Image (tube, rainbow, N blue to C red; front, side, top):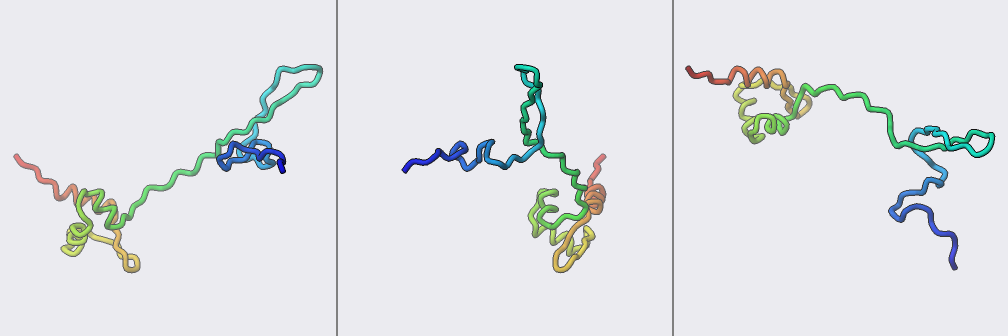
Length: 112
């Protein structure tokens, strides 16, 4: 029992004549044969650009540890000592990036 061959390239993608086309349509003129101007519809997969995400201001302790290049436990010790202020939301602790940068500037050592 052999029916028509399945459409597509065998990777789960549908062929262009599957009835569903996503993307934007663009008309391109063809070399006209006869009196009628012909146009070919091509689809581009371009989507409109996303709006840029605003920069984050609060970071969790793992991100702060990555930013400073130290383990999370050391970041917790800094918070417990009061070296860096933090924001508590529920049970989680977050550090304001501005406070973290101020801590870094204050902790710099300048030797003569």
